[in-house]
Image (cartoon, rainbow, N blue to C red; front, side, top):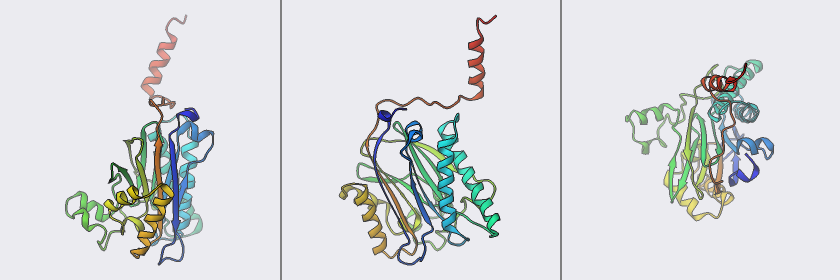
Length: 280
């Protein structure tokens, strides 16, 4: 992939303690503008350290640092494999750090998106969210890994009651509390003009889905949108840290870039057999 084949994305992020918390246990991270970004596409991530455990801020920052490093340094694997390996390494790093610090548990959410061609690759663990805003409609792309989220998926609770439920923040899955974690990994086709918003639960717990699209329609760009979402959450007295990443997809490359990862083993075997044809 050349620099001409990269999508054009305007981005902005905010991560602050909010009204109630003294420290910020959230973290955000953007792609690195170097040759690795050109090869594998831009990457954006958000993480929310678990306040009920020790060193939540350490967990969220470590998760994103490890995830980004793994993603850009793991060669010869497909994009979904890069995302999965990044989560596993981040999870193990947090688990081992907790043991080294002598604390019972460290945990964090992690939600990240990578854009290659017209395909948005998304990985998700926890209850931070990713929204796609298109044609003035906001659609939540992620499922909350919480007890309340499970109740919604089982149709035991209506989605409208999630934000006010007493157990909204009780996670059923996160990074750092066990040796293994199974992330959600999926792909979404995007268009020019689409807006992607990543946010922690301190934001979406007080901002309705439809309000994300209303704000995006009224805002001039990602910095304006991040600020407007943040100010709305503050005005509604969110009691948690507030983090937002806003991405405006201005231009997409024509055609889909080739996947330069190694093929699966049956294809590698077939390739060897083909290459050997005609050899003495």
